[in-house]
Image (cartoon, rainbow, N blue to C red; front, top):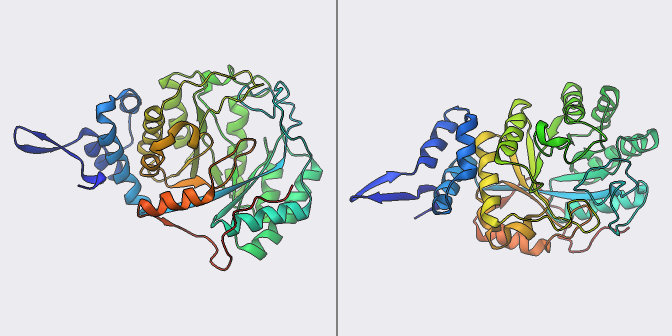
Length: 352
């Protein structure tokens, strides 16, 4: 029996699970209520496979069997004046991470090479800091056309808070989407960061939208938030019509205020992914940081809900070998979409 047709036998009859019934409504255009979304997060472990089946119906409707790969390039590391409690690059972190200013052209191009060779459709250039300075803006504006011309990659830029003018410049340069995560609910935000606000992040996303680029925005699960905070974040993303949602699971790094605060189990992660899929059915959903650490053996179940992953390492933590990701995707009967086909697969990391 396929995961998309899980049913329950009751008195000799076959009954579709409530999650499959809800999935049908969502596909027909229904928007989940707050209470319905909360029920997903509080559902029993015995319902987990039925929940996955319902979420997979939605995934299949909009994304079929495809998986899109993203590749992260930490283009500037550390040296950040913000106090985000979860981040090893913040000013309050004592984590022993590399610290350097924006990489030069050769290193950024080498990262693009590896991204293309690893079958990624999108190359994500990330810089630490509150907002990009003029030197960093010019570096991005210069390198993006060259990367697109040579490798045909989509470009996602994660540069911090953006003004409307900066967003327009990125659009002209050829940036396809901008990542700026909401991270949590408006109410919970002040507990994880005090140097900027939730509204500052929303304003950046609105500037990106006004400039004509797609939005990439998601959050982090496992920072002491309540179920209500996760639902509010999911619905904020829905209200912003975010095209791409990366969902992270906190990797509590030593030296950050949230060190040794991990409490998630793989089933919690599956429910959080299902929530995002039910609330944002047409959005690309990516299992992001903490995937290997928290989903563990349930990673394939996660991809029955999500349709995208990062291949390779994250910003300051390691991911699993790309070959393991390819094998998982193949074993699921899924297909990698949109990757360049003219280059061999690379197992090496970009030069630093």
